[in-house]
Image (tube, rainbow over all chains, first blue to last red; front, side, top):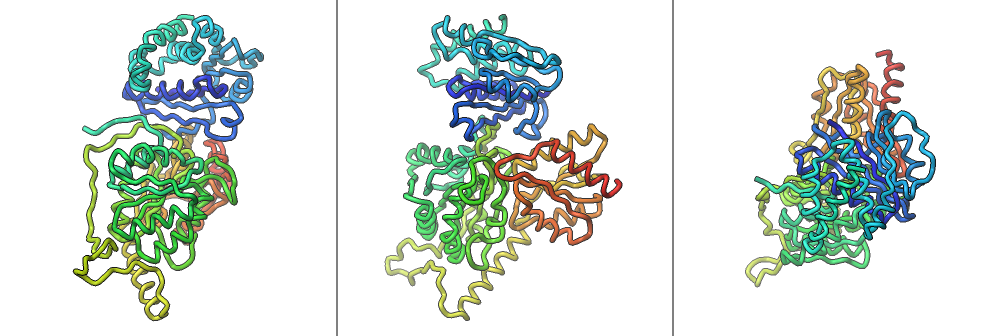
Length: 176
Length: 355
């Protein structure tokens, strides 16, 4: 099992947090994991992305040039990374923000209105979790229980009260 | 049972230093290694250590000189342009035979360059970026776990030989997160430090830490002693990894994060029916000539891959010494070679050598 995942969007959408949570959950599943965030000029210019590898065997490189799954949360990220998906790969977009047409036909595409969902839920911070739900459902890259444990381990204690709600959002994303 | 954590490379370097008994850190922020200073600023006060953000890199390296003179474990860190600024102090500390650990998380140069990962400071690190006949031990980790283990080891090596030890990483290694397994207890080697200058209460002759020896007879002897030490290190401290070298048609030579990409190449090549191996130097100085002696008869050619215009490849050519062709491919300026880049070069070599 090898999952090569790219998550991309604007700074502030929780791109890096989402990647870190996945990697952490993968670690709890006893998988080999790596997480590589963008730290360059693109981050300073507003877009952010990260590369997460979750694997049964030792990970060669944390630097990806293609991916098996892709979450995009804005148009520039779709433009940049759409061609990186391997045939049969999984594309998940935040359709509230990604309005450009998806060109690839050899992939599985899931368009979820994540930002709208989060706004309706009165918490913008949930859009990334909503999309992660779909990713976990479609790829099985990490166990749901491990994701929940990762939340408890990564979030500071004073934010633990939010976790049941976040898990509900994750499940809503899975079922969307 | 150790402690298993998901951590960023830069943070692991800082944690490892503290675990190794380092209680003095002097630095100045620069991307992509600033998390080392962040971590030190938070962690050092908790263990009674000193974190000091100096007014410049020049100042920080001279603080390292001072702290190392007292025999304490001390570290500084920076990225390429900052390391250039430290070079005078590095030469002085090397001349004064001071043990200390210097971290360089390389970015693209020359000049201010960029902030993306690079390996273009290999010459500076291994051939002496400062003046004089000196060497640092240069360690090149290629995973977060190895950043931990080699940082601890760097302090032991520094004390063992009274030498500067450099951790040479790049932006990928500094910024990435991987699982790290911390040991419950570190293997901290202790050595005689009766040379240190930390007060003598009139009970012994005072020690002098200096790199100035005006009399050329004395300076030559001092240099002879340094060279003797370097020869000993060359004999004892070469480290490397041989990966998939048995029956390899071509052996790649790469260090740090590029070695990781090369392991991806080996997997890809296997799927295409090509057998590729890897020599991964872990010590860049001393360069692991022993590794090449072991594999020299196996491949038709060597291919060095670097994020530079070709720096380590000179040491590979010196070591292979004409016995096999040595090729090079690399990217510069913060660009990272891809598996496809390296595969194309492999096919080019196969065509040229008809293998």
